[in-house]
Image 1: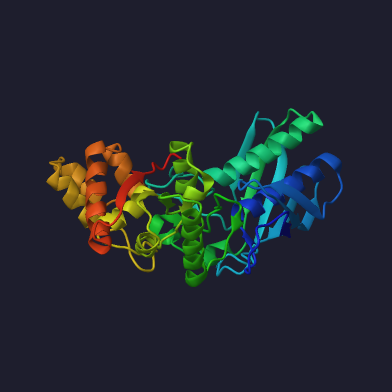
Image 2: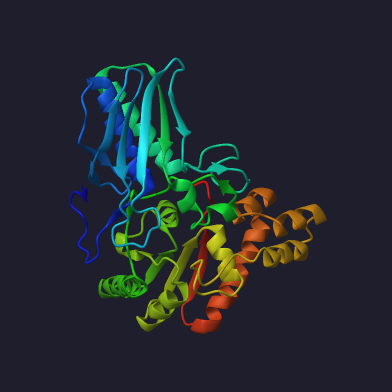
Length: 354
């Protein structure tokens, strides 16, 4: 497999489980339509690139077709690398496109995730990728039948034990993930180098106001908030917030906007400058204490303290502006401790709906 027109990098790109599921589904549907096996397909990725995937384990039966893609995480350490992501496609009497989870795909059992309990752990972006790919192919062939798709990953239940899924209440297998379609394998040092490079490029262009985003979704969302900003102003810093703001000070940047999901910002408000899960974790007692300070009802405070995810907290408080502003205030105080108010900092909390 390869990405067409990839960015230059010294590390090999990988592919998300969402991209693999999409490619396997497209191959199985082509087989359903044409009655012949498919060895390779091309799909569009959310990052506005295309990728080709080798197809394996093709099967054509009377009532369904099945195909698989071997998950390749590239140079990123990914426990799902080597798993086969299967898609079984069949026509349905029901209209529309139905996507189900099969063997090795987890089931959501707790609130607070982007997927409601009882549903397979196939995240919104992969769902959209699969549905749009199928819809485009059906329309191009003039087919109006309903389609049922079952995604599976044999061995996924064992692999999932090495992930955060059990803690999040996702049982029975892995999740189908990916907001980009590709896995960019950055080591700490190379990611930090990319941050420094981005700041330097902006500085050379005379830019003195930057936007630091802590992840792909935050980056996409904040670009919509500031549509008139130049592309060079946006730098994805990942979890290296403390490092990034210090380098901004060194470069003489005057203003930095930090964009992050509530979970990342809650870590920052709690005094963490490295937001990676291995270095810091969400402190629900801390969030509950904020609720107590704001005079929340006892039941809400208790709900915050025993929440499974920060998304669950946000849904519980209905994204209360007062709560979010307090998160921002605490975050700003913590940042200014390390940069001594040398640059102007503001924070954009990105809602999980993006």
